[in-house]
Image 1: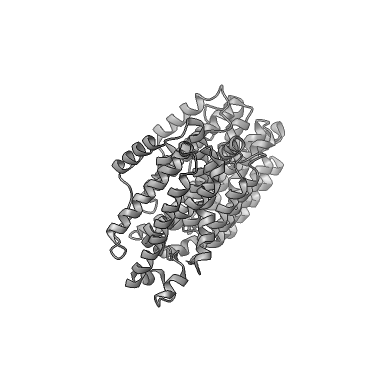
Image 2 (image 1 turned 120 degrees about the vertical axis):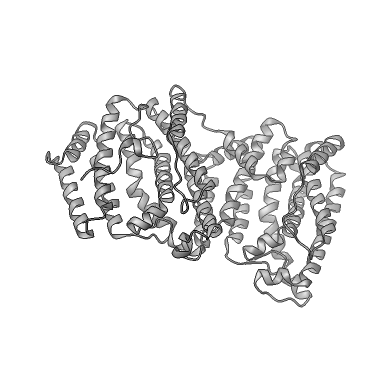
Length: 547
């Protein structure tokens, strides 16, 4: 059977010139065996039983080193020389057998379990071939799984049309209306939500893979790992920009050349263990009002607040994503484990930056857990708060925790109570500003007890926010926020305003948002109200003069 692809046809480096000539030969032997097995599993003219028989025959040839199958014999010889190849290839064969009999995956966990067989053995082969240490295995596994899922997303239409395979989990497809709806060309919006949620998970895997280069001893393998990470990032961005159901999404030769140069340029030096660029990029992408406050900080404090914000953004994206609630909670549990590793060995760039900030500014990690508690509330398919006590608890978790962390980075730990209360105030403004956006996710944060005072009973979120009485409830919450701003002003008279410049900037920007919400009115909501660049400049200038 003739191979359908060559190494140069693959998305990611297979046996590139970044590797030594000796290792390239071994890698090519592994690749050609895997390509032969993959072509058998994908052959359109073979029945499932015949595919399984051929894969079994191929495995026997690999184990015995049968010269009648050159691909198997070469990899058998590689294993004899380097002590790696056969075990990893047999794992791939298990994945190819699974492809023959299994065409759908229930959830993310089932999909990544498949990647454990179909992708991770490739990275492990490379590590063992280069005699690398076990510390590199975790990030290598993450990178291989990310590459596999990127390929699945890239080929999702072709896989379904030619092989009747879908690697988007069924539980995620259901969020877009099911398999048929997901692949309907006109259903762009819901499909985009699912694709972006999956790419969020892929980007998290890529982040975990960033620790790989620094853990590799072989500088050529390190260069190839850097090039591969660059290409993975590029393909992920392309898949966010383009719809793989409508068009073939590719990374081209220019991308590969740039990645090659990026890897080659890094052959002589180990990357830094902690890289602030990842967290700074998260802040830049966000467009958040909090960026205004960050600009007034010194470089070191700004780096620390970027770490806190990037962590907040990561868990918030999980809660707001389209994944099933049970899976969101599993993803948040991974972040809990990362927070628990902060003082040992965090595995993600955000975790390492957060660990650095925690060490410098004595951040209370229980506040990170409190934030995750709040995000777990948002994971539910339907969110309602019973009363003001529930609202206060929710605000304390999702906003007070951020204030408690930030105030230590600002250098004003004695202002803890002020920060927690200010966090609640800003959250009230968020709730008022985002009424319709939250309702689209079936979330209503204005307590049911307040709605009941005007004779309103629980109903679908769209029905509640369209009720004319809902505007009157918003007025009462706005009055609470206005009173809370006044209390913050009074508290500031007893605090060191110079160290609280970032908090004051945030407070004033949110106060201006509340002003504009009140001018607009609560019954005529149109679009999401945000501050202009002129607003930000005026607030920044005023705060710098007053502090």
